[in-house]
Length: 143
Image (tube, rainbow, N blue to C red; front, side):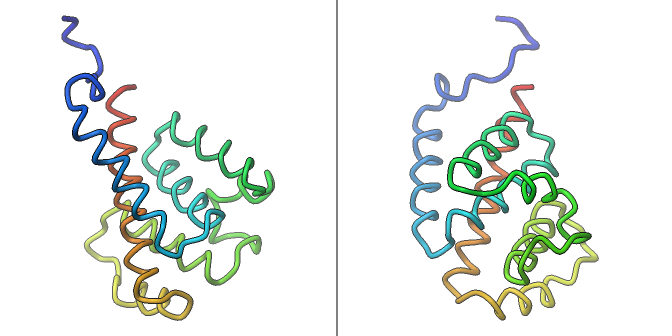
């Protein structure tokens, strides 16, 4: 085997890949609408520099009706007026859980989330972010 070859997760760990897909499906059924989910996974994928995931999530978001203009500006969501307060809270949480800064005020970010989301939705959003970060790392390991 080529020592520089990317891992073959589907062949080597099919049970783990299956479990990840099942977990992804389960978490997607807990009150976070697809449009917001697309924004969150796209932003995490941008931060993690997973080209495959950015391309896939951009395409999926467009297929679900998201505009190209908003997708083009997700990367600067905090500098533009395209996003609602609810989306901005979710995107801030996405960044905090993707770029683990020990100086981040997670309590303040959670309080902001709770202005717009139920407890189940806060948990679901956190799980969606955790899942996309796992998928991004798998994707990046294949670059």
